[in-house]
Length: 248
Image 1 (cartoon, rainbow, N blue to C red):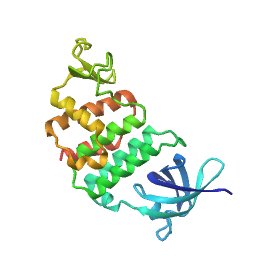
Image 2: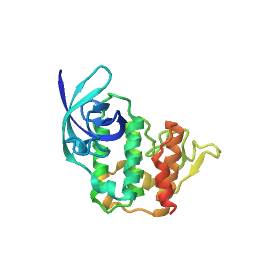
Image 3: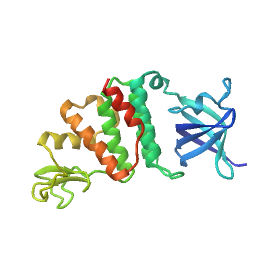
Image 4: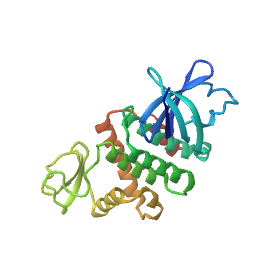
């Protein structure tokens, strides 16, 4: 039996038998893997806490015939404050689900893991606009998954001037010369183009310093959600909880 030492974040869990469960972990060395955690559902299990969603831990696993099996674990950060706050829980769950949806099993992506951890730490520690964090996370996770919207130049002629329209199906911004009349073209102001490029360039941990217009933010929240629907074509169930909470 060859043991593998990993670090990762638990994305989701599923009950197995009476006291076991299968956890999906996004790891540094193997990407997304499914791991059997024997006895993890027992109240006094030493691995119970480290097998909960959001938990960032060190894991020692070995490969079985079909799945990995957890040998032992130790918590680095549990992110329990996220779980205790309904709003943070909704946004955090959305992040975990996006990572799960956008990654195939056993495909390493340390950049996306780093983005997830930085975003969870921001969600955990910072007094930040959750929609701003969500939008920035969405843009960057799309980029790491190969679906990056092009926002710094026209997607057709590569001009960096007269950028006026965002087209979801085309995958980014069009200049006024290349844009044909279409209901799919979303007209942008100079301030909106500038904001979108701020989101593109900013590091997630620097979000606390960004200045933004709440109306522009709301516009791009809708645009990026529609962008996901078009290019990913997968339902993100946790998004409904965010919308329900915002409609309170």
